[in-house]
Amino acid sequence: MENGVFVGGGGKAYGEKQWLRLDYANRHGLIAGATGTGKTVTLQILAEGFSAQGVPVFMADVKGDLSGLAKPGSAEFKLHQPFMDRAQTIGFDDYTYTDFPVTFWDLFADQGHPIRTTVAEMGPLLISRLLELSEAQEGILNIAFRVADEEGLPLLDLKDLQSMLVWLGENRQTVSLRYGNISVQSVGAIQRRLLVLENQGGADFFGEPALDLRDLMRTAPDGRGQINILAANKLMGAPRLYATFLLWLLSELFEELPEVGDPDKPKLVFFFDEAHLLFDDAPKALVDKVEQVARLIRSKGVGVYFITQNPDDIPEDILGQLGNRVQHALRAFTARDKKALRMAAETYRDNPDFDTEEAIREVGVGEAVTSMLERKGIPGVVQRTLIRPPSSQLGPITPAERGGVMGASPFGEKYGQTLDRNSAFEILAKRTKDAAAAAEQAEAKEAELDAAMREYSSGRRYSGSRVGRSTSQPQRRARKGDSFGEAMAKVVVKELKGTTGRRIVRGILGGLFKGR
Image (cartoon, rainbow, N blue to C red):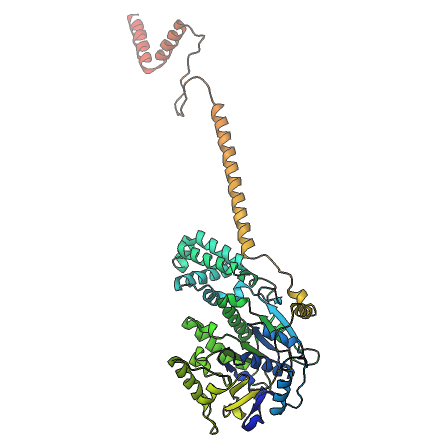
């Protein structure tokens, strides 16, 4: 089949080739099965098939085994002859060993090129999920994002968000009047969660340069699709960070990619290993978001394949969207296991040649029960399928070989150096510095004014009484050189000038003239 991925052989004696059609590969899929039943090999051969058809792939390497995709298999490998026998059984006539174009990524930048995003791009919903915040704490985080947007404070890395929360706590009375109550206790709780995330290495994930999604969707010069492998063995120590990152990546693909309808082949295939981590204790809002992305991202040309141990790890609304299925063995040791086995069997289109529930329980390692979408998107009849052998190395490559692949990649120079441009942390620090300088300057001026006033007050010392303002003629003060007689004479003259004095003068003169 030219427009498909060869999965293995089914039917009687495994002679019927089973294909995953590329034109229905964006209808999503499920790879399930108990530990040790061959899910990783299935994941590896699907990545090889998509790459060979020119479809880029993104996958998480939880155990470190998938790095072998970068190196061809070897005739000296212990399973070489069993692989050749299996290829002959299923009719894989052109089976050869080959490597594939691989790019290694790592959130911690240890085993691959660093992947970063900004706090603003992650958004308050996913960060609240990442930090396991309560409803009240999530509300405060939403306020922080809103105020940062209004104040022109870019939130790029963790220290930006931490500084924004400090500012929010200091200005909570003013901000609370508009957005609601902000408690110091809730702000402190968020800061503690951010500290835990920082100690887990999450600070390396937030920053710039942010990942360009186009770098995940490249093809090699020979036309094969690039296989992007995320080193997740260390990341699994922080499972919430792992699940949140993959969900963010899916959301970014959903937001950024244009609508393409039903393409002949996907633009990208996304494998979500350990998918149960995404839904464990997830709030309904988050599950609804995953369901929306799974339902609508198909039209963006992206196929999403969930890998988990048990199908009931996936919510029913999402499980119903997964049309292509590879079900490895399920072990039914408990009542819950038996119920899950029965429910898994009921989701397949029956094959009259065998009992589906029994087949799921009995298939061996490297064998699976499969059902792929056929023409017009109809689920195919369930088949017992012998999975084809991988063309690349089964198992991890050495650290030196990984380093060689990374050294030849064009992304080392692009993402190797961290950028720290002007953002919320720097802007708020400058505001604080400017406010402190202004306060210091104001205090200095006040000190200078106080000193001037003290000097002025000390320079006003003089003798005598204070003269108040009056509209009347000011009274002259007797000079120290005047004698007592002179002073009395001045008083008499003053009195004679007054009304009483004029009466006395008129009386004396009147008497004198009258006698004449």
